[in-house]
Image (cartoon, rainbow, N blue to C red):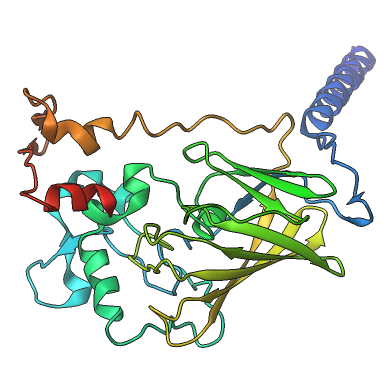
Length: 323
């Protein structure tokens, strides 16, 4: 009897071990690292940046270091102190989703942006009127360098004389010319990019900007005199170190610099998806022009929101679309 019992226990143990081995092999195979297919390491003897990349930082909220904030737009709360401000009415219902994450910043040196005395008040005013003024909210082209660190991926396709960037946000694109080309006939949102190689570092001179883009959601801005020098340096097959020297004598007292890593998206079958936000902002942009207002009222469990659209008077109507 006892021998039969021990033999049964041994049989159960062996069977359990076999099942465990099968499960272990299955889990191991499931968790195995996927095979990543990368483009050739070099193009015409230079580093090949082809692939899909994305920044992983808070620069699009604010280039400078900042503490976490309850919202991008705030108003005075119970106490008249900056740290006690609360979300403003238009963003109150967004809760934590509308908050601004803290950041160590990407501005190099002392971390300060050297605004001229008459330009700094404009930056502060921009921040206070973020909803009306930030070009991102209107789905305008983001400009350079902002397109590089928005929270959306972008794809680089590199050849011997052109490097093309396709951005997910608003289907934006830019081309870096490594050959001799004529400049654009007018100023542009994304600038005119001319590149050259400094060893294995891609150096890009960007000019011909208009004055309608921002650097971030904090209201940091520039004029049409903006001039950028970008540097792309490959730190590893999956990391590019991105630096930008920013000059604008109309807005800043001296040149300043930002820097950050860009990371390759290595998910299997990664591709850019459409984010054609023009349609998404139609009501935001033009809803005040409708004969009958569409978005009027929203009812939740803890609050109801009523919206009254208005048309800015006179020239202010056109200026709103230009900001």
